[in-house]
Image 1 (cartoon, rainbow, N blue to C red):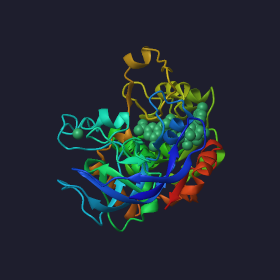
Image 2 (image 1 turned 120 degrees about the vertical axis):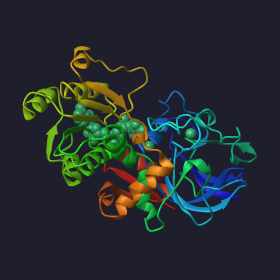
Image 3 (image 1 turned 135 degrees about the vertical axis):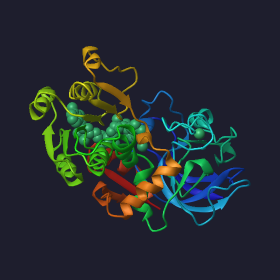
Length: 367
Ligand SMILES: NC(=O)c1ccc[n+]([C@@H]2O[C@H](COP(=O)([O-])OP(=O)(O)OC[C@H]3O[C@@H](n4cnc5c(N)ncnc54)[C@H](O)[C@@H]3O)[C@@H](O)[C@H]2O)c1
Ligand SMILES: [Zn+2]
Ligand SMILES: [Zn+2]
């Protein structure tokens, strides 16, 4: 079939919205009609050419939600009519990682996905007979997408898909960092560095876990106001002396849980140093620039602090994204507050400009 999609033709240049071909779903795959898709930093990162593993041409987009239109042979997990959220982090349910409750990093299709192919090593996207590679196994800046069934989370049909799409990346990453990776305990003190989509999600996750104090640190007063709306009990403007200020707020000890959601390695260090002696856990969700390293004075570790990383909030997508969407429907998560702009596919480059200018938290493309 023919459809419209936003193609990254050349790094550093605007995406070009144009007609491309999408082939039918093969064994184990489904055709999804996209209804909405969030614009995330990772799309911009790849488009800019800074991502060393990036390639072009490709159809970007990975924060999608839509409706299953058709399925290929041997598909058992979804059916036409199902409402789905796309998963750049799939869940096969069978690999050694999927069978462990210690990780969400499914191994089933990683290699082909990283190279831009569907699991059988080919693409469904093309233009004038030339294959176009998929992006993050999703390519959701398009009217339709073909995905492996293990990369689709079936969500409640009651959830508006223009909100549900945020659970495909940023929101689940933040919520899950607090709920799955750190498993924040009720009554604890938390500090979240960064109040973008991921940090705000972590603030909400700490609140849902019953944290008593949630301190959010950012440079933008506007974003700190959003953090208070998500449950932050205190807010601080970031800077060189922020660790000292956090220690002052916590009787000199630091927080039970800290979260880093800025991608800045200096802030990661502050997050480690703000964690409490004895048991403080620092969860890093930000993605650092290529070649950057995180500096930790080992004494911080010897004296009982721990550091861990979190990809997609440690969430096993097919199991947990539907649960989080249900919590949104139950009124526990305020998704509307994150959506700052609604744009058409043709305005996709405006979505990138807004993100570069830190104007709003999320632009959502509506198809
Ligand atoms: N781990 C994952 O699976 C995953 C998924 C999505 C995004 N990410 C990463 O998470 C990070 C955050 O993503 P986002 O979409 O929320 O980004 P964002 O740019 O919207 O938010 C980052 C926030 O950090 C703040 N900040 C910058 N410097 C600071 C400082 N010195 N002190 C305090 N705050 C500071 C900014 O003001 C901004 O509000 C990025 O690095 C992104 O690549 C990771
Ligand atoms: Zn993303
Ligand atoms: Zn797996």
